Length: 615
Image (cartoon, rainbow, N blue to C red; front, side, top):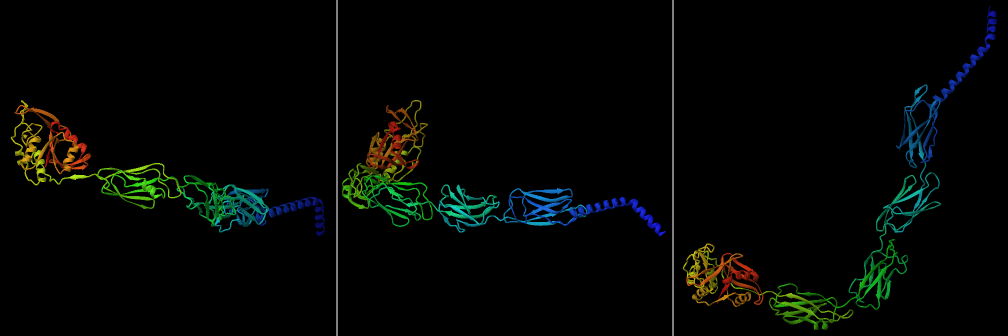
């Protein structure tokens, strides 16, 4: 039974050996494929990438040691903008590539993290973190401007020496603030930048060295030396051979690096540096009344490195002709009794020649003294209200260097105005029409005689009546007071009286009085200078109407309506040229009237242009 079983099995094996072999081979093949797929998709991740010295301008590429079905997220730190792209094959994702929008920072360590990954068979797998470091920027071995730069010359070159060549960062850029145009020259180990024009002199300047990716390698702030500045030059006018010809600069001048003929005068002479800031010129043969020039050349340098960008040309005038530069006193109404007249010349003069040509149109010269270039003459009794002219004739000689005057000069001033103001007391008129009586009352009071409007009115022959409007008749003002002293001129109930009755009233008090018609300003001024107040007729307001009427004696009388009388008590100005008068107005009070105002008022009175002088 056992043998049969063995024999049957042997037969069976012979019959089916091919099938068995085929099945076994297929099984082995399937197993090997499964094993290979498991190896590719399930073996540990072993990323490969450039870990050190990654080029800053190249994408970051990582190849995974085995594939994954998917990656949830990828991050890069420090953060930098860019895009990720996956690399895949038939088994899944096998790598990734990051392309930054801008280049990586040199010498920087970056961390890349892959998270949320899944395997084909086993599912989620732990996050993977990797780091890489970018290449170092070329090291700066030396920069021509030290860290503590201080002040640099205006034409300073900037040189940088690098510690290596090649690499992805080998093109250097030098920027300045404020912006300055520079030309660059490359050498084997670095660069040199030369200003196309001068650096901004006297200003702060910042230099910024960058690589061609814009990375700042170093920064320096310095002060550019200021351009040469002339703080003191030759005085511009009235220059004499004794004047200072020192040109003083603000900072030390580098004479060795400046142009050879850096300072030139068009006057004869010699110049030399007496110290680092001062150039002294000694002129020869200067001429009076002439203009000279001097030039400071372009390119003059200070020892600090400032450079004069454009030549400076200045001029000076030598002392010219003698002139009277100023006179005094000035203005109007200076004291006439005594004045010290000043004449100041523009330079020292020969005093004798000046005194011989000096004159004053009024007064007496008492003394002449000198104070520097000023002639001082004491003059007395110049006269009131006088225009005084001070003159200097041509031919005044200079004391030494200069030219004598060729033109006469003069100056005028006006002396004070004499004022006469009598101490006449002021009284208001007691009645509506008693201005004549009030004026006489004030004039008598000045002579020590007291009275009243009413008493004086009686002296005028006071017999009040109203005007007969129908017959146009009224009393005679040359003989008595016309109308009621409390009447109204416009209504014809009261008016006034003329000069003759007023003068008679004054005489009745024991004083002298005279009557005058058509008086002038000079007449009034003379009376006041003679200590005589004047009763003066005029009008009330600015205009009046001249009316006529018939007197009881058959005469024709006329006068202004409205009429008014005032007392003139003072004058400002000379008899020949009075400027104005002081007036006691019995209604409005005391006031100053210009001559034109007062004369116009009395002239408008027509037949009443009269006056009574009280002695």
